[in-house]
Image (cartoon, rainbow, N blue to C red; front, side, top):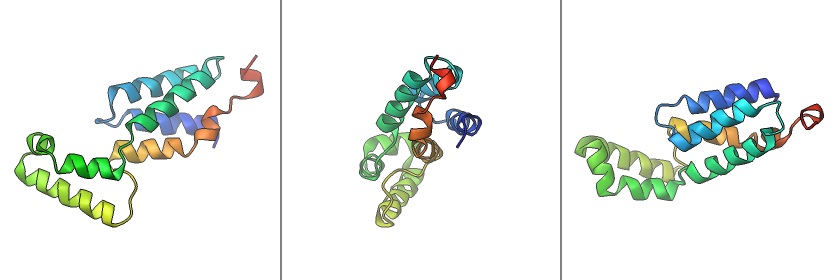
Length: 123
């Protein structure tokens, strides 16, 4: 994947409405750093933020069973959310399937490309 494609992938992630502020900031910082000496450090920060923010399936189930989910969604939506979390886990999913987590995983799959700065960019 080339840098232009990576930029589009990260832009897609940071525009997800429920993407957390820290991840949006890390993504925007990486985009701004592409082609500069700061690119690798910004990529490392973006990767670290994704790894911190992506929700493992067991954490999703725990949240779905919590009072916090009930308060956030209301009884009917919380029940639907909980059932969805159970179905995801039963299907073998490792992570939450919301747009933010799904797009973050796609970016994380490009970890090597993110960390690779072109030789002339290192000068």
